[in-house]
Length: 433
Image (cartoon, rainbow, N blue to C red):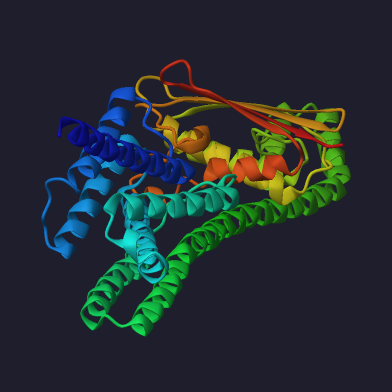
């Protein structure tokens, strides 16, 4: 008797361990594990405990059992993994929906082909987990290089309706097929399960493509804003050039007048005349960046003004030619996002606020170094990506990701150093060859 109990307990432990492994394999695809080992282990323990309890003690109605399983899985995912709650909720419900559909499908297969094993719970449970494991392997092949992107709540709610509807439909069909007890009904139910399973697997594809589309819109908006700055700066440069031509044209007459005053030794009139020329000629102090590269000068000038308004000390050392082997839009995207992030971070810093930027072009390569201070603690997501500190994080946080994509076009590198609290440094290197 004791041997039977031992084997029975060992069987449940094995199946619970397998379930935890599936949980890990699935969520590791889409989310980053919590860095605090205690939290990660606690989340797994919560999930493992529930998996061990289900077949032994729990006698909830079907929907109650499903609801509690989803809640426990969601709680475990929150404790063990980084990420936004709504994103986790979508993947938790899809996780449970696919698992349920797998168990139902395996049950139909056993009833149709191996009826004597259909009522043996561990057999069906193990086979369904094996099928689910195959699905997870397929998902890893598709999404292993991709990164999960945040979605607005309304889209997450719409996507969640598909797996929830699948669970509801499948449970009703399963209960109906049991009451009918007809072989054709089982075949039809099995096909229904396969269709619903395919729909739930497609959720991943829809989610990723929808997230990519939303992110592309945000990036396009950033491009448009920064290109407007470049266009505005270009117009200013054209106006300044035309004004300079006029000044050169009038310079001869002005010099003749000054020479006449000088011959008569009328110093006060010379001073007054020169002051009039300076006021009318628009001879103002040179901008902070005057490299001749419209994209770089416009962005440096724009964010310099913004920094001054926020009492941020802004120093720039720019050494670039007018033309470089990089697309203006890419340089605009990299520099614009870094400057925007720097200004927004520095304005929240305590004490002396500052931004330092140095850009150097040498042998067809562009080197950019930026440093600024900030307040608080930086959070990192999957792939060592920085999480946006803005309240509306889902509509932001695409800056550094956009920078990385633009830099990757030129096989460059982005190095972020935040080892010193309150000091943020970023280095970007673009290769022109």
